[in-house]
Image 1 (cartoon, rainbow, N blue to C red):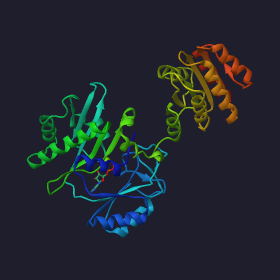
Image 2 (image 1 turned 135 degrees about the horizontal axis):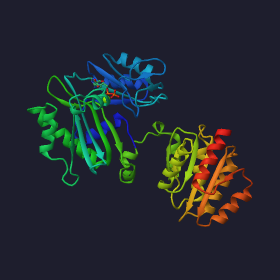
Image 3 (image 1 turned 45 degrees about the horizontal axis):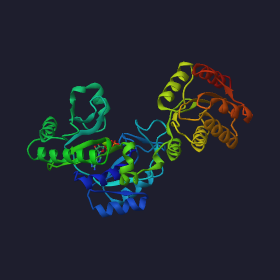
Image 4 (image 1 turned 60 degrees about the vertical axis):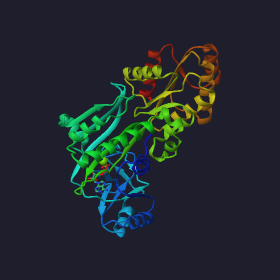
Length: 395
Ligand code: ADP
Ligand code: MG
């Protein structure tokens, strides 16, 4: 799960991470009021979307930039009118962009240096890793590609936590000395606590800035959270913004289905993550392209199967469906009933190939055969994939 920058700033306050003052705004009036309340000489107005690269982004209406500096509350209001409700496209949003429903109106600060600081979960070392660079700002991807030596990586022992010698080492590498090193140690430690106590998988501050009067501030914030820990993070769950998520994935999460939308046209409905991966592979291998990853789980109910089927059918890109079930705990007949119900309710008119194997398979096959649905049955995974790819190509 992700949150917006203005919400991340609430966590900054809770954990004592130094940042600039700011307020969220949902209308141009609120933006103007927020600017008046800040009373700063220079104000920054920032589009709130779950993607970075806003500074260099462009709105679909042609308006340039999702981050703007301005001087007066009237100017803030005018900017808010151009940005709110519009779609912002950045190098992280993909060409479809994201609609801006919220703005952050914050105090602008003078900047002498822009640094990069992130904490993420490193799967290779099974530990949190800090990544820092003197080359902060808007193009960290380019730095990683063209001058990787400018990126420092430090693994944190999850049992010991971040150690003072490590915060000093990072500060020194970023050229932060004297009082700035003291501020840096405090800020890095506070961010590490935020990361651990909020069950984050990523905390990214780009830029972390040094001001001419010697302050170190987190100016931007991108947070990702471990979905498997959300059950113990109610305050984080309350920040969820469903408008930012793939509607197919939102619907799937309501039914506890493991669903990830992809950009192919053959939907798959599978039980078990490994089998789902193998199904996607075999579709690709047979010359097709999967529209999703979908694992209904080992003990799916008829309602879950039916919900999964409706999510698939609600996706306009889907041109064919492959059901691949290996019944271990799963009863094949439950799957069959779920498919039949959903297909009747939605008026299925796409090619559907079903491969069922295992627990109660004969009853499942009988349910499907007696339903009168125009489905193709398959004897093996390879056979199922070949059949659905051929059916989609012929359609
Ligand atoms: P993004 O990473 O999505 O482009 P940022 O929040 O990093 O958005 O903003 C882009 C750039 O705008 C920053 O690198 C910084 O130069 C400038 N900026 C952002 N916030 C402020 C601020 N409060 N005061 C001054 N400049 C800012
Ligand atoms: Mg940034």
